[in-house]
Image 1 (cartoon, rainbow, N blue to C red):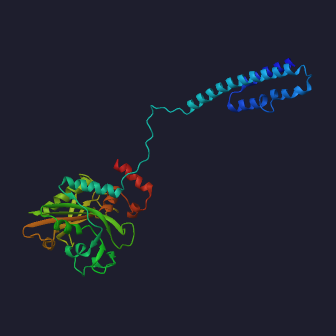
Image 2: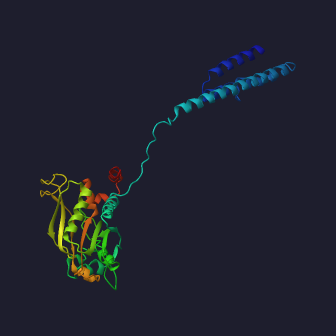
Image 3: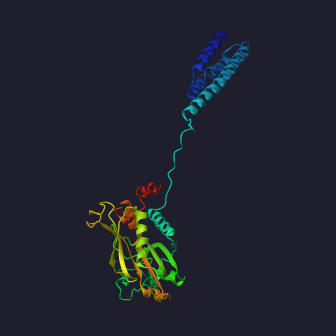
Amino acid sequence: MNDELERIRQRAEQDLAAACDSQALAAWYAQYLGRKGEVTSLTRRLGALPPEERPAFGQAVNALKTTLQGSFDRRQEEVRRAELTQRLEAEAVDVTLPGRAPDIGTLHPVTQMIREVTDIFAHLGFQTVEGPEVEDAYYAFDALNIPKEHPARDVWDTIFIQSESREIVLRPHTSPMQIRTMEQSTPPVRVVVPGRCYRYEALDATHEWHFHQIEGLAVDERITMSDLKGVLAEFARQIFGRERKVRFRCDYFPFVEPGVDFAIDCMVCKGVGCRVCKGTGWIEILGAGMVHPNLLINVGYDPSRYTGFAFGMGVERLVMLKYGVQDIRAFYQGDVRFLAQFNRAAA
């Protein structure tokens, strides 16, 4: 009987030494020390032995079980350490490598352009102010020399807010802040006004029902058209490059006299003529002019003493021209793939 126990011990020790992972250890334990294992099953023989042999056999089986249990505990610890070492080596992080930069958001391209434009004008002496998006028709039209019969006041051009007492609109342009600013201050005045505007437009690649404008106004003694031309030329060259050529042509706007449209030479064809500039070699970017004397009178300024200039530009149009965006609707569709391009542009 002792020979049999010794054979079981030797075989168990050999099998234990060959167990190299947790699964093999679990299988070994079930084979030898589990409820149905070989060592456990030896105790069931006690009933078949003569009474005088039972104590010695029972002690021998318990001693074998204790020995194998101790061997199992030591081997299990060795295997656990080996597995931990292997896992640490496999999952090791090289701390000397540069980290992976996380994806981060950025400012919307329209916001980026507003900040770029207002920063340029800040260096030219202009203060940035903002105004209400829901506006009284007096400031949106009447005070700006836009009379009742003007087509801009048609409901098919302007979004009106229902009101019993007066005309209230979603501002169609940022020009009302010309009046509000002059009412609240005395010359010299130099401001730029960024903000969202609203018009009853049919949506297409170049029109949105809401968009952004930046209005500019300067009023002081002895301001001339030369001042306007110098300011706008410097602005265009800082936005689109120092090599840009500029062009001023007569145009009509109710709140300026004389009025001009301001254009730059096409950045694609260098002024030769292409599809982008429709063969003209020039791209119009904003409207401007000398402040109409009626506006100065409306705010209590003396037009014989003060003159000024004003201009207005579409922010989305500036972004489209600078970065080659083909469809204005892309700015407000929330496509992260489109917006992410301006993260790199801003960097």
